[in-house]
Image (tube, rainbow, N blue to C red; front, side, top):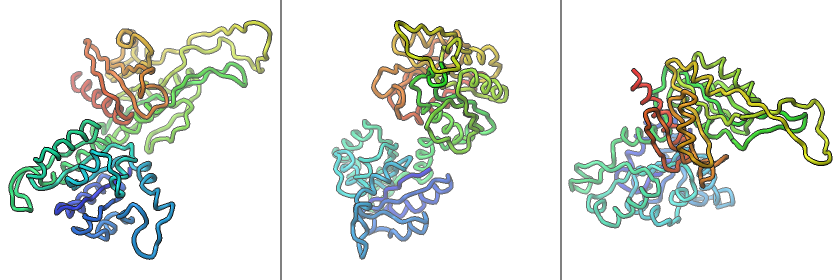
Length: 402
């Protein structure tokens, strides 16, 4: 995984070198971005030696013989698109103000506006600067926009004063980054079975019935579980998504094929998360030749496909079973009914008509429905973050069942 580490101008800038080493221990690829002020405290050469790659120090090409060009002028967009997280440590009052007010005048502030990855900010400054209403208003604005703030520690500061403003401990910052990226080890020695994507049911050699599922939620679940130490089996219908690194990928096409694959792998799974949008019906008799246009109505006879979630529920044993419900109305009623009928431990439901929660989106807005009537609504968030919240709940279910 790749993160960008923004280093701004403060005495604590030297601690960013230690932070790079700590992040490398988590096998993270770190791209360092330095402001001009940061270079007054520590050199780019230090970070280049630690990371093994160039350090970005300017919005345009580096100074010297190499002129600015189109590639360097849009580099912030390329970095923004390929990183999984942006971390700024230390973050000065100045960079907080730029982020809060959308001021893009250097590479780091422009990168912040251009990326859709999670953002973590670890402020460090004089106690009076930290306590100033302007700084606190900027912090509040950033929190409201979803920026994750690692509050500074209290103690003796470089300026000689004592109070809040000291950069948080390296381990504290690294732990926050790992939590957001799902780099935990709480699923070690567990096997997680995930189904994802749509299924396709042939009507004739040319046409088939399917749905609008992209598979993004299921693939995010597989990736999150693998990052947290699980052995992951991903049974996937047809998608254009990249196979997550480290998972056992089982491609299928029809609901019947998915049923066989899920049944085959379920016996060895501690957790089954059925995120696939499986076709509820298939043609009763697929034609071996293309159906030609005719006059009047064409009546298509359909039959139900296997109910994979219900089958798993009947043979659940000690396995945690999670199902999904993509709904357009009566969300709670339908989710609760599905929870009872299928024998699942939890149903993850969403209203696909809501902005940011429909098919083929990078975000989702879901509610967890659990046994005993408990409901846990989540705000709009990225699908990887939703996946980690689902896995957190799975661990809670496991703990409560002991």
